[in-house]
Amino acid sequence: MKISRYITLSLLISLSTSAFAELPDTLLVVDTPSNVLITESPEGTHITVTDTENGTQNLHFVEYAPGAKVSTSRKSTRTIINFPGLDCLNKKERCGCSDSGLSIGMDGLCIGLNEAHGQTGGGGIQWSKSFEISWLSCINVGYAFSRSRIYLGLGFDWRNYKATADGKWLMPEASGGVEWGSAPEGALVKSTNLKVFSLQLPLMYSWRVPKSRLKLKLGPILNFNTYSSIKGIYDDAYGNRCEYFRKDFDRNKVTLDFFGAISYHNALGIYVRYSPMKVLSSSSPINFTPFTLGFTFLL
Image (cartoon, rainbow, N blue to C red; front, side, top):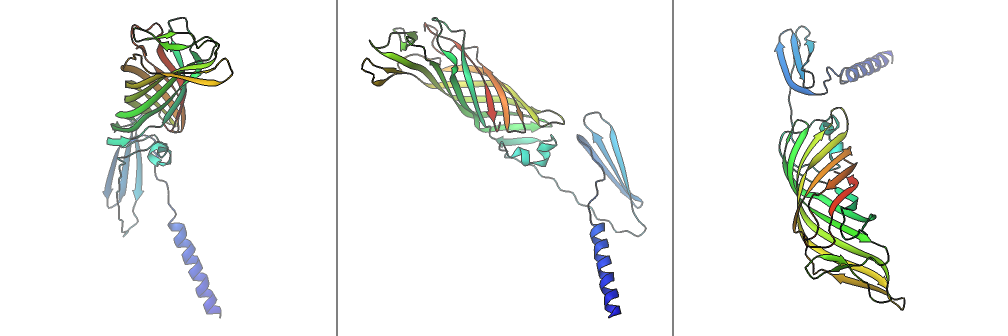
């Protein structure tokens, strides 16, 4: 009985010692490494890591015990397809690093308020009632290097410019533009909307702020404005709710925007978007340039 107890006690001590010996140990931590040099000799292994930020070298020496048998391995991976929101689960993204080379990705949503900047024709379009919904790029192809990435994408944008004051009624005019007209006799105007849908090509540069989870993104966006319409809602003289719809007016079919955004952890951020080009044709009595301020999601 005593012998079996000694054997059991010896096995427990052996297992606990083996488990303790297999616990991982952190040898060296460098936030922004650029070069790693490993030199092995019978005495041990020399590890030299160069820091990207300040150019300093971090040294570590692992000494071999006499007669020790040592094996080493190396493994590297590179992600070609990246999706917003999944980056925050990637260890390389958490430390601010990124894969180098060609990559395919996707951007998230932008939702903001539109200002009809520099309105002509007496004004009337309200910033607080006008909004934009944009999918910056449903697919993009780019090149990543260090903390940066440059890419060209394909996305969609929908802008709504709205006026709710009674008597403000958008209508097409004779030269193909848009003007403030008169609602049907006896009508009580509820709202009138100018809507523009665009196919957009964003050329973006993104950069991760060192030692943080912030990401900056900026660049131009080329818009092909494929559709536009005017919709009015009013109550007639008998109190019936009515709608008015027109799309026979001229828009500026190709415009250029400038975009800038800052996001946290690829989840939530803010953005601005401005175009120096007019929304409608140059002859339109009512015209303006769009300015948008809003939030980004998974960008």
